[in-house]
Amino acid sequence: MKKLQRNQEKIESDISEKELEVRRLSSIIEEQNGVIYKLKHLFSSPKINLDDLRCSVSRLQCDIRNLTLDLSNAREALSSIYDYFLSYPPDWDERRQVLIDINGRACSHCGTRSNLHVHHVKPLSKGGSNELSNLIILCEKCHSGVHGGRDFSGKF
Ligand SMILES: [Zn+2]
Ligand SMILES: [Zn+2]
Image 1 (cartoon, rainbow, N blue to C red):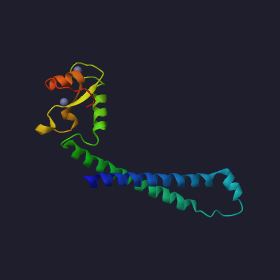
Image 2: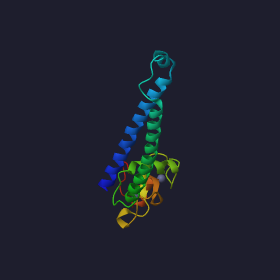
Image 3: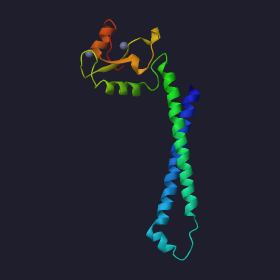
Image 4: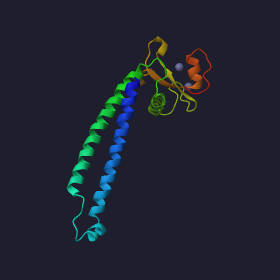
């Protein structure tokens, strides 16, 4: 698990590094295409080969595409592990937000729009998962209700 998380972080930093490099090279290309640069170097051949630069940019863009694919695979692998996490998974806030949005920001029992909680239909303790299909949005009052009146003040 830790390894998967590290792997994902590594891919993310690889991507941003390469994107930075693409931006750097692209700005060099742009500069060389600019009028001022052309005037300045009218009588001397440019030191940098534009074709080489363009080649590097497209190579980098290809790398980024592949890495992005790796990243989405890594995310998927992690997310399916989180589905069966025995407690609130690290991406809980993300799941919570997705679910609240899907539900139109309202309690699925009474339609109240404040103090929204996420409730596990089948509890984790009874083998329920963190899959969105096992989660519903309830307001604090309804949430307390389905748990037999337990105090649910706060954020869940
Ligand atoms: Zn609950
Ligand atoms: Zn409610």
